[in-house]
Image (cartoon, rainbow over all chains, first blue to last red; front, side, top):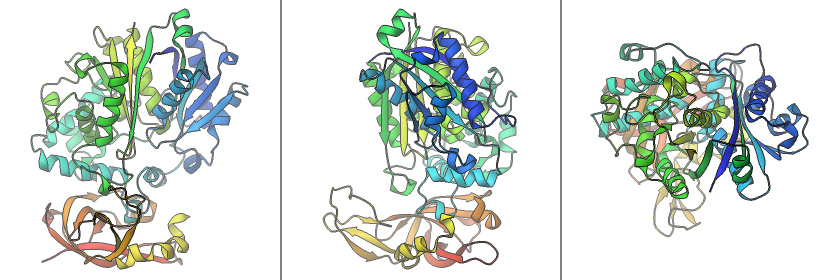
Length: 384
Length: 132
């Protein structure tokens, strides 16, 4: 499989009070068109990842909005898979091209989250879990990941509180080097440990923030992409699902669907774990990054702590992870996150990541989780 | 909205208030709340009334709740293995977080969950408490 990337566009991530859902989406779309050097009318289909348009803005039907923004009457669909909505939209775009139904596709991700209170956002996000089995009991998303953290750190005690904090410290280090990141400040282990407790053992600095933002990427068939001298290709797309609720999983110390999705993507791209030069993973909470690097095979089960002990996950380390700053520091506009991860992969493979550039980056993977692991989507990107 | 719906409350009466679950009539695996296919592939289940006794598998203390639960925060939540085999997620009550441990024995109690506004319905459900 080989689908080319023609262009990327991304808005600033953060509290963007002067722009709504539509304006954010439009800004990213226009930037991607400019980067791809194509006209909107050349697009055959659009896929837009969005989770909370209805619950936080009263706006469903974001697919139609994406087409309307560019005065297009082309096929345009909203894709929802909770926090994995962006990568699911990307996958739909890849499949549309692979099927021969489209030659050029625009994939968007957008979320507008800061118009309402934190409690309203917390309620809306819980829609990604199991409403009857988890939400009804008062569980929150930080609570779900805290349950995983407690189980993991009890079984694997070498992941200490300090090493878990290293995930956020490293992601803030990268965020400080990313112009569109929500947080550009570096932090220390003490910043994480001394922050307000959200759900024990996770503090505010173990948690990704509430963010507005949009991202767009334009894909094309291999033939068209080659003709337009595209430098980056998607060579693998793996998707796996599991139970909505944690209580029905086969493991509480891993995210089983993550490993399945990774294997599917690697197999399609014909790569091995050792071929991976960098990864953008779903660190909605610090523990989620630990579970992600193990799911991707970058560390054996229970051994991810070593990567953080050795500072291997920094951009100049042996296994760079989340050079964008991850969800923690770059921000987590839910539907846009999966597309942002793809954009970071493209920036790295084009060699445009400036002071966070991974040296000799040829193959990168993106790993996007929906809910507490009910959906995981992994993509493989190759630079040429 | 849905959290205030008395129809949902009526539909889930057995699960929420009587701890009635489902046992696969082929392989015997038990579930709290209805599920589609059993992992063995069977679609037929017998009702089973859980004893309400179980052990903590993992737990946390939620300090910042969703809208309906904000006034109760902080509160403890756990995943619990019921003695009959099913795994359930529930709040822990009448306990100190510092005393909790994985593997600790707990039992079910009926407790208030949340209120639908000042004059609305009070929603109840099952919580668990450590056995002393």
